[in-house]
Image (cartoon, rainbow, N blue to C red; front, side):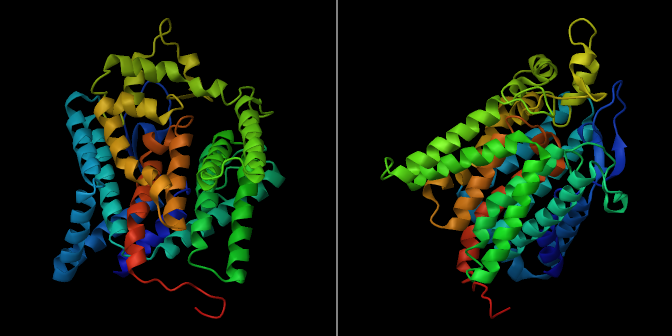
Amino acid sequence: MWGQWTALVALPFSFALSTFWLVGFVPTAFEMIFELRGVVFKLADALLLLLVGCTLARLINSPEYRTQLWRTTSSLRSQGGLWAGVLLVGWIVIGMIWSVAPALVVYQGVYTAVLVLLIVLLGDGTVRLHWILMSLLVGGCLQSLIALGQWFAGGSLGLSWLGEGYFQGSRPQGLTFNPNTLASYLMLVVALTPALWTYFPARAYRVLLLGGSGLCLIALFLTGSRAPLLALLMAAAFSLLLYYRPHPLRPPFLIATALLLVGIYIILTRRSPLDPQSLLDRLGFAWSGTVAVLQSSPLFGVGAGQVMLRLDQMVNAETLPYYDLQVGGLLQPAHNAYLNLLAELGLPGLIGLGILVFPPLRGLFHAQNLVRRALSAALLLVMLVMVTEFHFWLDPHWRLVLFWLIGLWWAEPQAESLNREPYRSTGH
């Protein structure tokens, strides 16, 4: 129990830590991010191994736990929350047949299977949600403080012992490998902090929550990453529309909507001093390589984890020039997770993911409490960012965040049934 508790609570803190140990990789003609062509081991992987090990031990030693977990699995299966994940794993494994590197497909399949198990364990209500969400907030505050220091210093702070990479420039990246990934993490912290208000109604706690979320929002602005900011604005506009749905012509709604729409327009069209392209321009960034891979196998895809390996083989000076596909000397996939998913797993994979995320996204309209609405909104934010970023699918460690959000959404009814006791300033 305590091993499961530790793993589930610490996972959100570990999401954005980029320190890794290279286990193995497929040799390629061109340089690319290791996570896109091999197996790397991160802190999150250690926590997942702890989670799997402790779960197996409990299943062996506790008949009551076997009954409880089977009940949870049956519930998720009956509601469609599990079959899509299982079928997705099965389809990934089948991709070994036509892949460039079958061993890498096995890794992707096993890793995704563990993520499906994570959904079940979260849905089982092993840990109360406020511990998990608080871990995310603490992780976001730590990353934000380091990001603020990096912004003032104009580069890294020399914290290599914490896993900080060396860089120079005005865009902080915290302990992640890229400002955009840090922004994605902080976006989630900001979006999910309101869910903690349900658990901490006392004013003193809410001041701390508001301060932590505000710190993360400041750091998010400093990253200069526009997609997470745009996603937050779009989600805010959508939330306003739902809130004022019975009376859409009220002045507060009209004013707020106008401001949000102006903000969305500015972020979409304005060119950043750090990037000569607008966000609209970047919608098609590096598409040619992934599109070429997709065209080589449009129905079934080329296999999980194989997009960059197939692209490496297809680079051609005349038809697919390397210099159009690289950034900073690294071969790049399209900055669109859905296009890469389609190239990897074909139409079955894209449909499988759609089925998996449909119930939580539908919760935006039907959820009965703030926690579930916040989780639905956070998943919507990730789905929006995936239009201009690839890491939430191509990097298994960020795919973990996607499945984690789905699992938390399924966990919320279980948390309600625990008859949770809110924290107050005089207790705990």
